Length: 84
Image (cartoon, rainbow, N blue to C red; front, side):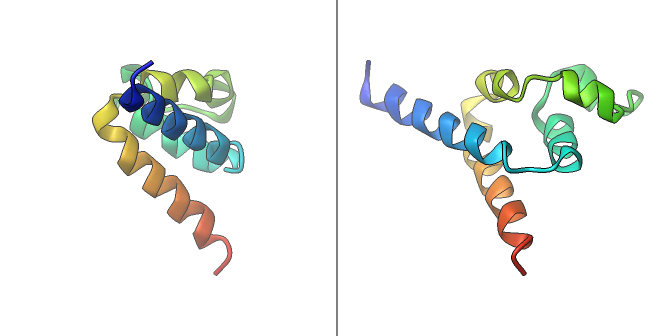
């Protein structure tokens, strides 16, 4: 495995771990931003039951690499914001 692939895998694993700490509403926002197209379509409103069906690991695994850093930063800020 290449070093770049290993680093990408570690970053995805970190994002998955941090998402486990998020609330359902926070994960709902995450899925709307980074999930499958039907989850981000303006005409499609997801409810909590539908969000629960989305596998967060799958969303992270399918996320384009160019969005990974931003997603990590957003989730970190969300978790840090709770402490304030």
